[in-house]
Amino acid sequence: MCGIAGFCNLKGNWKANIGRMNARMHHRGPDGEGVWASEDARVVLGHKRLSIVDLSANGAQPMESHSGRYVMAFNGEIYNYRKIAAKLLEEKKVTAFRGTSDTEVLLEAMEAYGVEQAVSMCKGMFAVALYDKKERVLFLLRDRVGEKPLYYGFTGEGVFAFASEIGCVAELEGFHNPINRKVLDIYFTHGYIPAPYSIYEGIYKLEAGTMLTLKAPFAPENLSVSAYWSMKEAAKRGQEHLFQGSEKEASEELERLLKASIREQMVADVPVGAFLSAGIDSSTVVALMQSLHGGKVRSFTIGMNEDGYNEAVAAKEIARHLGTEHTELYITKQDAIGVVPELADMFGEPFADSSQIPTYLVSRMTREHVTVSLSGDGGDELFCGYTSYGSVSRIWNKMKHVPYWVRKPCSGLVLHSPLAKNPVYRTKGTLLGAKGPGRLYEISYETDPLIRKISKTHEYCPYKYNEFGEGYLEETNHNVMLMDLLMYHPDDILVKVDRAAMAVSLETRVPMLDKDVVEFAWSLPIAYKREGDVGKKVLRDVLYRYVPREMMERPKKGFSIPIDKWLLEPGLRDWAECLMGRELVERQGILDAAVVERIWRDFTEKGIWRIQIWFILMFQAWMGARSGK
Image (cartoon, rainbow, N blue to C red; front, side, top):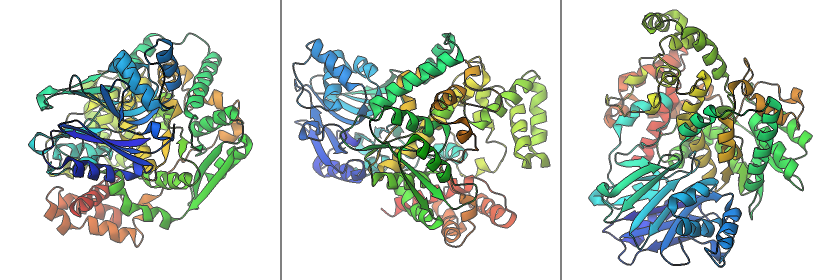
């Protein structure tokens, strides 16, 4: 795990600029630093190293290929690099390797087989910058599901820049890209800014599974982006070629694939552990790790003395049953509140999933013991685990037979009546107005007209709500799961885990996002994933071979905090009221001060909690951090 950065066509002091970019992401790579520049300094690559595989100088970056034609800065891990290395040697594409790093293997594979073919061979998480000196072409690539971040774009005077963190791009001399106000409506709806957009105009996130090509003279008209893998196509292909075995056979195949993924992801030259939140997903990962481990797996969790927010007791029970070496940390409200001032700098742009706080705290504690931690992310989206999936399917399958012209006005009546205060009726009212499952992503946030009034800008960026039409996949929940894997999972969940963990130089790995596991999950019928209110059926079948069913049948809490409760208490409330103060908001001129004030007063005076309060606070905190630089 590392950080990468670079630029083309910078006219200023290139050494000073790449130095600032590297320094800005020191936490991503505290073990080493490297810089490479072309002879004319038109192309510059920077790298910060967190040593995981091959701790020697042979793994240092940026790295040049054996022939000298290619140079690469690489962030991530190629889990099957040993197989690729064996193939390269067997086919005599290389005679020997200088070291044992996956970086060298990936670089030589790209020279031997071509960039796109080589990356299609790889299983892993990565963000890559590769420069072809001969053809004068820069390639940027991002892994299939978006585990590793990569920003890119043009700044002033035709400079092209890229980096693992958007804050690195902002360090460049002459960077004055304005705030992209068109994305604010999406941000205040979801709490994150989705790919391909960023908070700055002209700066983008490279989307998952895509490759950017930029040819000399490195101008906008020489840039192109293409997909080498598609979650959407993988879902369609899987559902068109369904797994033909029984549910028991499906669980056996899933166990085999997960073990293969975990076995590869446990490989490192540094200590490896895992997060354990007592849920199905993380418990499955830890159980399979322990079954493959020669000793005791290190497992980590945090607890809170808050009613309804503590899974540490259950996690400890599971860890004891599995026989792991378990570490737990009970955090206080003050521990969590103490993280808040660091969030804006940690995430680089507005990001407002409040579980970012406990995720950071468990990462910080874990880093004291290991350098790599596996997590259970992805289980809900791949195996129909969210409780909302059950209600969506049940209600939608009833509603869809009623003509839309009848349902739409009925939806309006429900959502604007007192019934809408009840979440159950609000969900039903939302579904009434949906043309198809994909539309739920858009209209489920339209029940409150204040949301679209927070920003003073009324121009909007197109988003992926309707990227595929109604019935793209035959089953309702599969459509909604696909939307989650295209948007919420890469742009919220994976961003949260990456930024929070890398802030303390902890590498996180996600076995369920292995290519083979993902593609197999899409080949399963919905009946193998969900029955009524029980989701992740096939995944549970795997887990129950290692952990008693009764130990797992409890409500899941996850890493969450009572942020609404804490915002009403002294200290955090003072901080919030300062950021949401009318004078400050009016002076900034971006948000509607009257709307912000009303949302806050509804909360403090009437007890009406809107998650947008946290969205606003994180935006304002980012604004403050930005202006303070």
